[in-house]
Image (tube, rainbow, N blue to C red; front, side):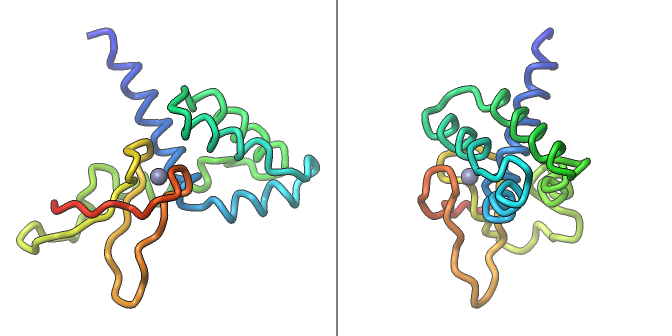
Amino acid sequence: MGDGREEAASSDAAERLAAVCTHLEAIREDLRGGPGGDEGPVEDVLTTARNGGDVASTLAVLHAVLQADGDPQGLDGYTDHASATRGLRPAGISSARAELVYLCPAGRCARHWWPQAAASVPHCAISGSMLRRERL
Ligand SMILES: [Zn+2]
């Protein structure tokens, strides 16, 4: 035991990272529209994640900047999707169906995407490659 807290913290970071991965463009717009006027904080997160560094502190900075820009929820305002589907098997999805899900190719974030007809598979904002297909 003793590392339960660390695990919780890192899955928290994975969910925040998933929010960045999923909502990158919206977050960039938020940052550009804020008093800082630049995308530096989110670029720092991406660079750190790409380099395999500890993203928790860059995520915390991004979160604080978004809050300072007038969004009281900060980064957590973007994570509703991630937390609603915590555990990768949202309520209402029957396991009898052979479910395919697409996951972050780098395994860095908690992002996942359900296949949708007529929608092309999104690319991970961190690695730049297509989400990888997994069978549940
Ligand atoms: Zn990702």
